[in-house]
Image (cartoon, rainbow, N blue to C red; front, side):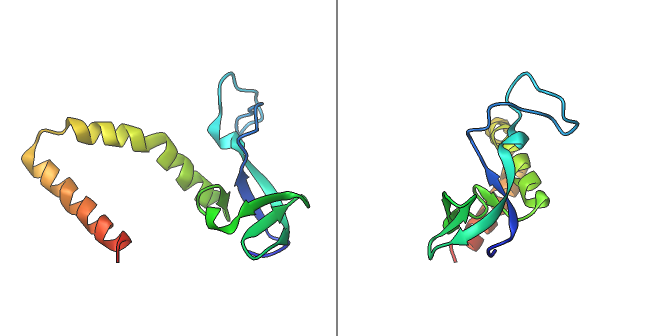
Length: 113
């Protein structure tokens, strides 16, 4: 990412929500909190937006996203991680739990090497 790039920034101060068709929504519409902004400056550790808002570079993938696809993936995880965790807690089948354990162990090994 560099100065001039447009990126999606998670903005928790957004309080008026509109869906993809532009209709006002009654409750929180999580996707509306991702605002397209231009990088207007940069320091060693941060990106600057609108000439004054600073966001640390280490927040890439957490609150700064380069593409709409990255935002969509983040939203999917946000909407599904709890449900999946609750489902796993309810599994009482040995074979299914062994498969889940193998997946979790392989992911853990990848992230800790």
